[in-house]
Length: 102
Image (tube, rainbow, N blue to C red):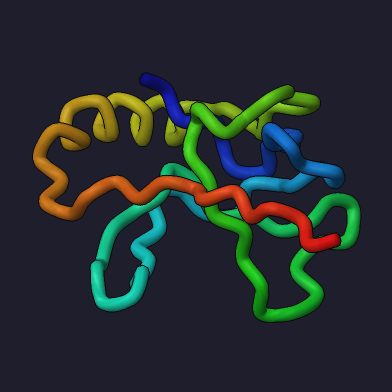
């Protein structure tokens, strides 16, 4: 599995607004369980205007609008990621969809 580069803009399944990837493999404390997501993001086109980070994984992506910049350092990161992902000791967390209240 490849990770999208930083700066990539995507729409999530059941999402209403695009998000831009700002961090990859962030750790998250989910009620005392430390785990990781593939991505952390901010709203697009707003950017990081508050302390909110929106976490998600590759399967949560519905559409990719733009892929971020790729150079040698990004290619090296992807190679290292493929080698090291199997050694991550933290569980991969999953996005939980909230039902809208009526």
